[in-house]
Image (cartoon, rainbow, N blue to C red):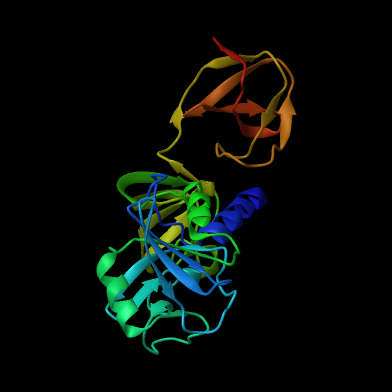
Length: 274
């Protein structure tokens, strides 16, 4: 569980709400360099235009990859800190604290808003490098894409719910072990319906589907770690020496086996199934 949260924290630190492209060559990309106080718009690998930022240099939100969720001629709202595009963004007005948003001239703001679609990624950095060098860095980032799904998820442990797919957007709600339905996936997050409204859940402690009965014996031919749940990136509880064990359930490549420590999961690299 701790390792799961650590990975999500790193993911959120780099990608905020992690809603950008799956291709290494996005249609549009905005790069904001707070060191030079300039904004650049790329179409694929071509630099279309550089714009001057009018407010003072700030390091706020540098290192984040965000996405445009709302737009008009005076406002491009991004999903910073788990918000929905209403509080942080690029503006030519005074809709937000200019120290937390990027201020452009009205002419530049109107032009930029006309050029880009919603869901355009925005990378905020502070660097002496040229925009072309920054573009090369940006498109190498392993960035996922939002997708519509219709899938059952099995929650295997109590897990928190989030207003947005961002660890900074935690609610006070939790869901215990149960089967739920997800209708959207965004990076390492699932969007689900709950009694508290539509909320997000990280994928660390959920299974896509559910384990199925699997009454067979398997022969372990080497030392095999035992885990509480059939999910990646978790710490092993103990290990089993080579022996034959009874399987109770199967989930993908995982086996739930009966042991002296209770029923635990193995993901062995070498087993013989009898």
